[in-house]
Image (cartoon, rainbow, N blue to C red; front, side, top):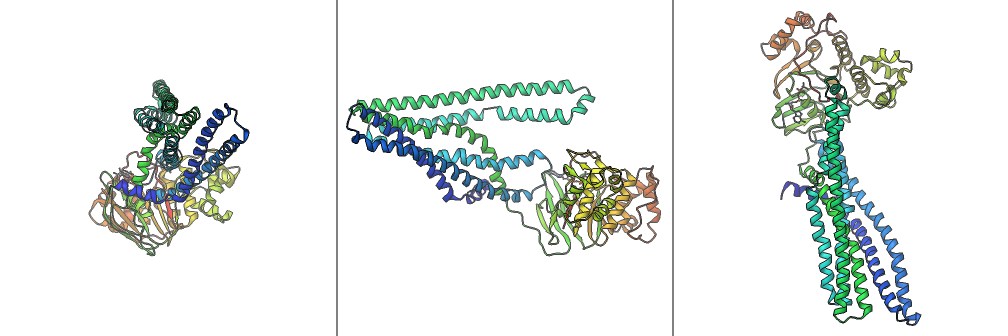
Length: 591
Ligand SMILES: Nc1ncnc2c1ncn2[C@@H]1O[C@H](COP(=O)(O)OP(=O)(O)OP(=O)(O)O)[C@@H](O)[C@H]1O
């Protein structure tokens, strides 16, 4: 069986069939009531023309009323049961999909995340506007054809032919035309152009490219308008075809009944019954357009479900360990990494850009499932601290990590992250509004706020990915020093490009092209010929901060309370070469 087949099976296993059946049954009964209503009304009208005794009509009159009332009641039940069944499926599907997704590379862009959410929602759409109408149409069309054939045998095949055209040919045409429909692609192009205009307005204006970008966006808007119009024209044409097929079939059924020698009453009943039977079938044309639209989303969901469920990391261990771990994208990001971090150790992960540092942290945090190998990590509650600052006060942003923390604890965390002075300078102090609706924070302030939040969570294992990247060198070193002091005795892994603080760590892990090429205490690495020493010496030539550290490597390791270095703040510190990288990095805390 194909991989997607496995995903379809997993998806179908989430369906609560009795509920779905109840919804379809209510829909079928509502449509049958509509067909019955029309057939009885036709019978009443033609019989009443003969002016029979009222008693001869009374049963039909009751029948018409009963059908009219029951149709409304069943329609209501269908909506209720249908939405209940569909929402339950989606509610069960959502965690399954997100769990399946959680084993993949973290979604760092909002578009991909919102597409995942809407992909799951498309299952609800498919049930309500695809599967239910199709099942209802099938039953109602079959029952109407049989009823028609029972009234006028000759009219049965005529009705069957008309219904088949409306249920199969028109939806097939709708699906085919929709596949060529450019609306979705044009809408996406316009969204991209609009987003670029908004996000890149400053750069576009600075380079004089704004008018051209606006013109491009306008072209996309015009193209979307045209394809929207074309799509609406096709939809209207198909609707008109459906109504034409309905009318022609009803006329043909009546004519064939009369031709077969049927009385006026029988012919009218068959004709009206045919007319009503189409009411359940005509929505299939629109359903087919929706199916075509939603199918890629459904395929993405089933593919995700088809992928093997990632093995959970081995819990219960108090060491953090990777065993022969590899992560492969188009090429290996990690390649056979073995790493053990004993509890309470402070470990720095260094390496050139693209060496695999962030991937290593993501694997340790459980955000990425290795392609091969095993991860052990302490059985802890994960607290993921991404770089999002909520549109709330500083206090609220912090309390997210520790709802019970008192003011002193909040201030301590802010001090450790190097943000307390700034907060104290604000008139509203801890109640300063920040984030989208409040005061916009600088990159460094924002980074320190999320760092304070991570420290406040006080996790057993703290994973930080370049936590001081946006800070100026002196502050960066000060903050890192305070963080390590605050985390003394607690496992802390820090990805960093800065070298000046490395002597403060228990161990330095050097990554290159996805492999650990060196590891050990800073002093041992500097003393050993190898990539780290080359790097360190190269930095020492140009960087007094590293040189100052270099001079000390013979001295015993300092206590956690001491700073990184006595460096001239005016001088740039030791920094590993790092090209511009605009990917959002998250500091991750686990507990
Ligand atoms: N989600 C992803 N999809 C495809 N490739 C990826 C993904 N994440 C990382 N990579 C690739 O894996 C390799 C390692 O990336 P990683 O982000 O771990 O490097 P890094 O050492 O943290 O780099 P930097 O210091 O620039 O942040 C890179 O070649 C990168 O392009």
